[in-house]
Every structure is written in structure tokens, then in C-alpha cells.
Image (tube, rainbow, N blue to C red; front, top):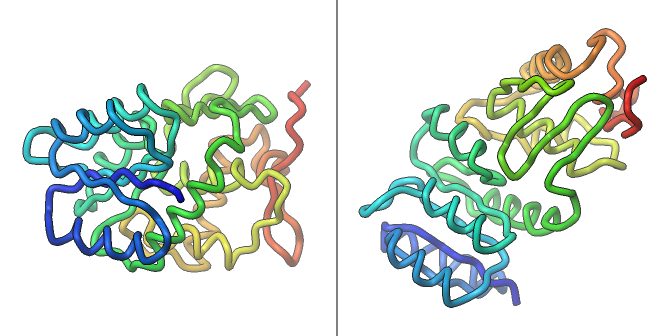
Length: 228
């Protein structure tokens, strides 16, 4: 049975989440404060952490850092804020994903399932062509120079990295990116984000080698050999 570490100060939300997760077959350990989270972290091992950004005696960023130092598990942030800066901070300190309250139970379970499947499948640092993605620190570099991606662009890139041999259809990308940054993503905006991401990571955006188009189907990650 997978054990979820839930760090959430709202007792009602924690109770409902615990009930939902236990119904789905998870075991849940709850900590309402940063201090209690640190104490539990030293006593038990977990498979995944759900961490609220706002805590009464600190914040989720500190808890995330402590989790990542103690255990190699995915961390998903729960945030009531649509503030992009908070999301960027969370990704930069190593969070694997985030979900904005209020969220649909089905969406949360899908995110948890995806994070658990990906855990351990992809190295902490992924290199393709002349692009390096440090997923522990949330850093993307091209030929050693750091690139600044929006939260949605970063999440889009991770989708390809975490599914290196899979053709990702536009429908699947839309499902995965649904409300990922507190904004509606439709077919037209997906095209815009693919274009923006390519402009940042590709040597020649007009002839992409990292995110390649599979005509009539979707997109796939390119080959991982280094560019000459």
C-alpha cells in the first residue's frame, strides 16, 4: 500500500482528502504544521507528499526542501493561490507538480498516479541534444545557459521528458495541462505554448529536434544524442 504524506493545516480539507485517498487504497499520514511535518518525516518513509504552501508556523516551500533532503519521493503542492511566483518558487525548489484549489478529486488522483508512475523512471538530470533539465532543482539550461520557462511551459516540457517513447496526442496534452497554471488551456493556446517552448529550447524552431511533430497524431520527444 502506497503511503501519502499530507501536510495541510485546514482540518476539514485534510479529513476530506484523507477519506478520498483511503477510498482509493492509499494510506495517509497527516501533519497540520511544519513542525509536525518535520517530526513525522524523521519517523516514517513515504511514497509521495501533498504539501499545502500556506502553513501556520512556516510554509510548504521549507517542508518541500526538507522532504527532498530526507527522502526521494515526488512532492505535489496544494495551493489556493493563482500567483505564478509561488508556482515558480515551488518548481525551482524541486516540487514535481502542483494543483490549484479548488480542484476536482479525479484530477488530484490523476496527478498523484502520474507522479507515482514517473518516480524513479527518469534520472534527476535529463539531457537531450544540447538541453539539460535538472528536475531536482527545476533548472533548464541550453548549452550551459539557464532558460526561464513559465510554469506551464516547464510542465509541458516535463510531459515529454517523462514520456520519452510515447507519441503525445493533443487531447492528452490538453488533459494533462488542464488548469495547470490557473488558466484555461484550449487547442489554440496549446499551439501557442508549443511554439513558445520550441522558440526557447530548439536550435531551429522551424525544424524542431527536441519536440517533434508527428503529423496527424501529436508530438513526441526527439532522440537523445548530443547535437554536433
